[in-house]
Image 1 (cartoon, rainbow, N blue to C red):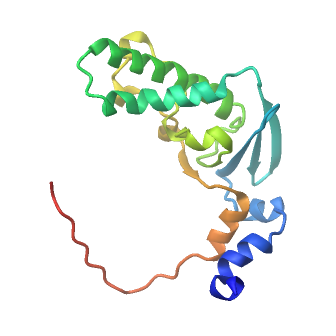
Image 2 (cartoon, one colour):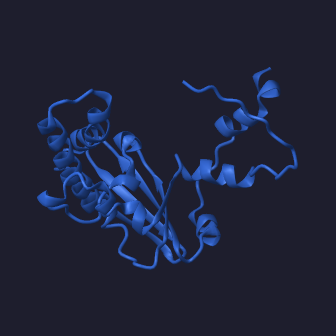
Length: 193
């Protein structure tokens, strides 16, 4: 049967237990937190969990969240997918990146991260936020004179270590089933083009 051939999958799918937040709080270090998002049809929320407790708040429904995420991702990838000879298109992408990178940070991350001592943030996105590279968001606005000077941008990842998970349950499963270190050697070959 399916259960015999794939016991781990069967266990994960059919023996689901609700999340116990106290378990995660005990495992977190003082400088760590988890921010989980819920994107619904009528309401959007963020949940913040650290060693001290849990908080929840709404994200404004007036934000064009889907459009912002798509436009932000396109501002990153479009100039490099297309062979752009026109510098005005590149400049426009830089401007969109700077504007939306800060707006998304301002509305999605900053309200949850009121504690300054947090150094490690685990993001659990939902819906369209699963396509958002949170570590590339900008913690401050970029002036027009600084557009395109990427090494000077105030990226979120420069302030805090950012990691991702798809759910608290999956995170717990991954932590329980960490692979044991081995002394096996690995030989890898790669071609060059």
